Image 1 (spheres, rainbow, N blue to C red):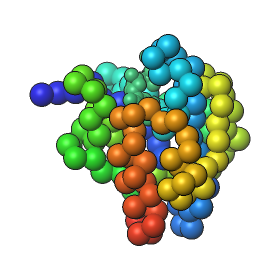
Image 2: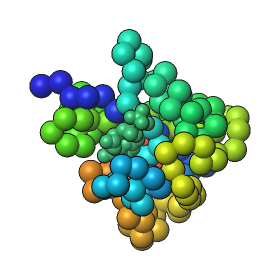
Image 3: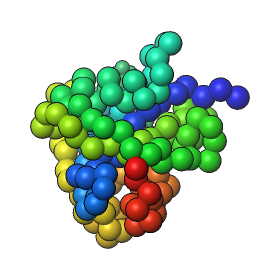
Length: 144
Ligand SMILES: Nc1nc2c([nH]c(=O)n2[C@H]2C[C@H](O)[C@@H](COP(=O)(O)OP(=O)(O)OP(=O)(O)O)O2)c(=O)[nH]1
């Protein structure tokens, strides 16, 4: 089955020696408003995933990034979000711009890369296994 492809970034303060993750709080739709997520969005027709991540981060946060390794999910399309959609996620580091809530978010937070700090945020439920994987990859030094 083909899922609708979503792409997103786990933005770190540094790919080489990460200490913090940039989480973003959604403003819509109502069912997801107020929940935290990895900034990103829907892949456009004919677009390569990595290009989609860059486009979404430019549109939503006004930043350019260097991409690191992928945070691999259980299926080729990444992490299953629901019966219709799956999301591929890459580590990223900001190379230009300062993240701002230009679109889709009302709050951004640099969160310590530890279980307690990350679990203190009200994540979209489908993101919880991805948050755990981000922690495992960063602990293992596997972000590049
Ligand atoms: N960006 C993002 N979307 C997520 C995450 N977790 C999760 O379940 N989703 C869902 C929410 C949405 O249904 C879908 C992503 O769509 P979106 O609304 O962010 O896409 P978009 O920016 O292209 O928005 P639009 O053009 O449709 O307004 O994936 C996540 O961590 N990041």
